[in-house]
Length: 280
Image 1 (cartoon, rainbow, N blue to C red):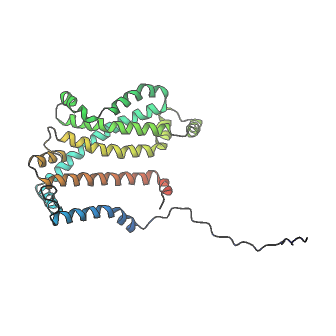
Image 2: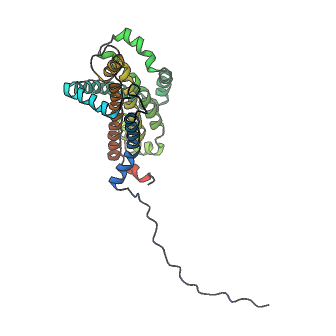
Image 3: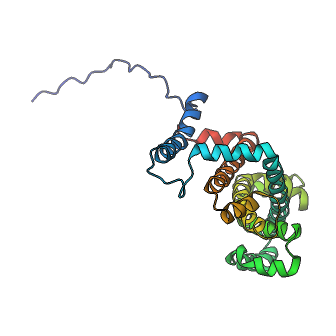
């Protein structure tokens, strides 16, 4: 029996360059094309269905009719007035309701006493659909601007509170202890350390608040309003103008897209590191 000779030297293994671990962003043109792909496909299907008669104009107006309705509103100056009126109501409502929800979320998330005092009431309020409060608000505030702003504020408060509360509770305790070691307490600790750390949740809450505010805006502007996109929806329904009905839907869709783009811009400025975890 012979033992094989074990080689004492081996060939050096060539080193491979490390795999790139950073984020590879797509070219802006390709990214924009991918974002527009599905909407353009839906637009083409809509145009083809109405142009060939597969979809009756009484059921769904075609793109040409909707563009003509947009031109009518723009020519009379009503489009700008209606958009401005709706933007003011939604802005005031979200600012009021979102501010209250943010404050209550921070209070409930920071202390056990705040949670015991605030959270049960907010959970009960969240379980009540805000549209169920419309008759009560009308009896309290009438059908003027106060009613509309309050309804939108109530709709926006719940998501802001819920996401802020979760964001504050999710802050690493070590960060809080380190901040306290540097002498930060009270309001300085809350709005200097805890709220910025919970910013991802707060921005998500803001996106949802703005989306929910559009629902509240429709409900508010269909009662006692003479301006606004919701009022335009009511007129289109009364006169059975499907072109104006579709136009209102398109306006709300564009507003939702603009809101999302604004929030994304804020996220990129306030939280530039979040783009590093996106799979490309």
